Image 1: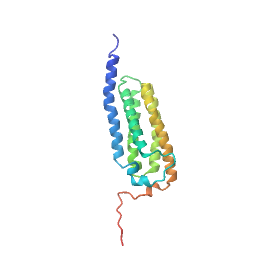
Image 2 (image 1 turned 120 degrees about the horizontal axis):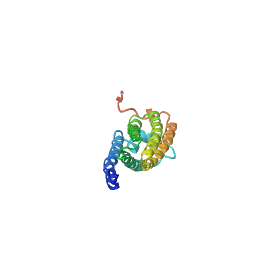
Image 3 (image 1 turned 45 degrees about the vertical axis):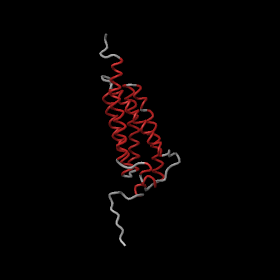
Image 4 (image 1 turned 45 degrees about the horizontal axis):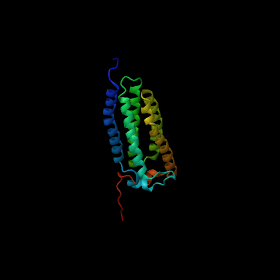
Length: 185
C-alpha cells in the first residue's frame, strides 16, 4: 500500500473542512450584510433610481446564500488539498477577495460611496478571476464552484455602473447618520 490515506479518509477530511468553511462563509456574509441595512431596508437605497435590469430584492439574498455556500465548498476543497502546488497563493488570493467582498456592503449601503463600491467590484472581478484560476490548478472542481460567483460579480458591476450613471449625486440623497440635523425656526 503506497497511499498515506484512503479515498474514504480523504473524503471524510474534506467533509470536516466543509462543515467549517460553509457555515463560516454564510456567517461572514450575513454579518457583512448586517453592518448596514441593505436592499429595501435601507432608506438611501430605496431613493436611488434603479436600472431596468435590477432583480427583485429577494433575489439578492437567495443568490448570495448560494454563492457563499459554494465559496465555502470550494475553500474546503483547496484547504484539504495539502501538498498541492499553488495552494498557499490560492488561499491568499481567496482571503484578499473575501475581505473586499465583505467590506463592500458597508461601503455601499452604509457609507453611500457608489464610486468606491464600483471600484471594489472591479477589483473583485479581477481577484475572483485569479482565485478561479488558482483554485482550478489545485482542484478543478473548486475553480468551477467559483464560476457562478464570478458571473454574479460581473452582473453586479454592470448593475452598479448603471446605478451610478442614473444617480450622479447618490452620496447626497440622504444625510449621513453622523450629521446632526437641527431645525431652527
